[in-house]
Length: 359
Image 1 (cartoon, rainbow, N blue to C red):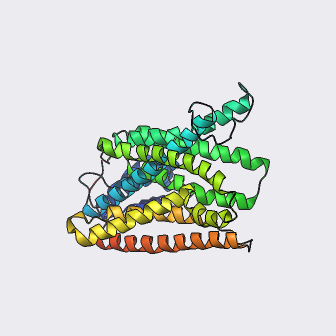
Image 2: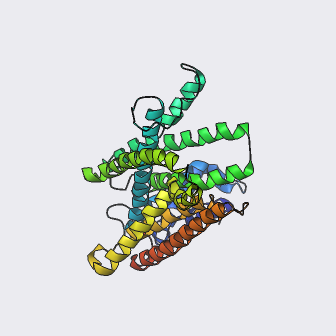
Image 3: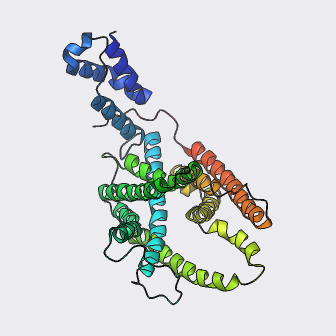
């Protein structure tokens, strides 16, 4: 065996064993034939394009679409459901952030003014940058709508643009005052965007079905986002009034951990987890590995995001209450995530990931 052949075989280990058993010799032979005289070169390596093609094939085989083996099909559904649920939550929050931006720029005439003003002088580059940043949440709404209407390519473009804008906004602000602790917290919180985006890119490959969901699936996060914005608008006015009370700081410490996106996602995941466990135990026909595994996957970025809000450098009573609520949230998420992961693992079909060819 030549060094180049050995390197090709190592690259092919990305594929499931059963797939390699059927196709490895054929694929190695094709790669070596395409290499020409490089076969006899001890320093020759597989081309990056070949490695990328094998990696893409491995994703398609392991996250199979229609006609794939049961285990591959289950994992494919899990990753696609992770993308759908994650983008649905981001679309809901996008409605909130977009409505807040429209309020700031005077498009919405709300009775409860938040006192914010647009950043930068009119027609300035600074105003244009902040306006584009403030309108960027609309990309997650577009991505979710496109995904539920069977347009995953449009959804991918919108999600990647939304994530790129989010990263660019942080880079611009962080480079002016770089702090490693701020960077670490941002990385933890950004996983709530990164994980659904990666699931979208990996799960909706060319062999995956482009399913059109019912209109109610499309509309639900958008309606929830509009309702959440109205609740936050009224709550902000109520909090200003309540803040005059001497008991307010203590009350705020109990409430605030549930208000950031990770806190709201924590609440949503806990409710969804309990609902699924009840359905799993009471209605066998609703049992599916995709739902519990997708919820368990989404639990990880939410836990890391919520963990970044812990403040261990202060010993006052309000901070102690604040930390205690977050610890309870993390423990509840941990128990829920592990329970869902065990249920999902037990309901997964047995056997190798795939044994069928992928065209």
